[in-house]
Image 1 (cartoon, rainbow, N blue to C red):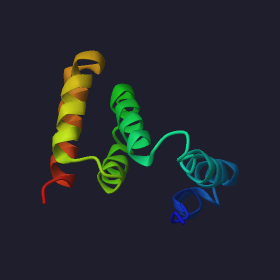
Image 2: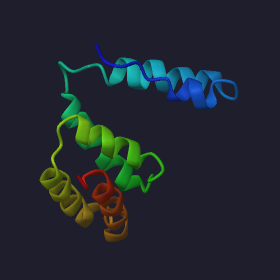
Image 3: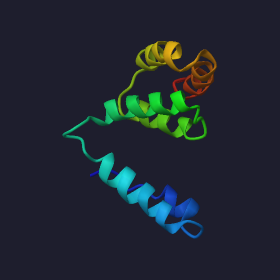
Image 4: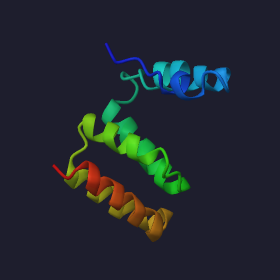
Amino acid sequence: MAERQTAGHDLLGDFAPKFAELNDDVLFGEVWSREQELSPKLRSIVTVSALVSGGNLEQLGHHLQRAKDNGVSKEEIAEILTHIAFYVGWPKAWSAFNRAKEIWSD
């Protein structure tokens, strides 16, 4: 059984309880748990690509770590970021590489 996500409740529960509920219970509870439809590894690849594409780097570190935990190798993340650099922009990919290097530094 997957660990229950509580970041929304912990960080925003008092300020934005509905947003926290949607984040923890729907996005991470229902959507991420649909492993028959899309594996966690593939979900991580899609999520990292979407975050980099949008320049949403605040959440990127968490999702890069999640990607690593879901089986994305250092070689795979390097290839993913190199590939998407041509579609989403070089500076976005460069920023993502800096975060990825920290996470896959072991």
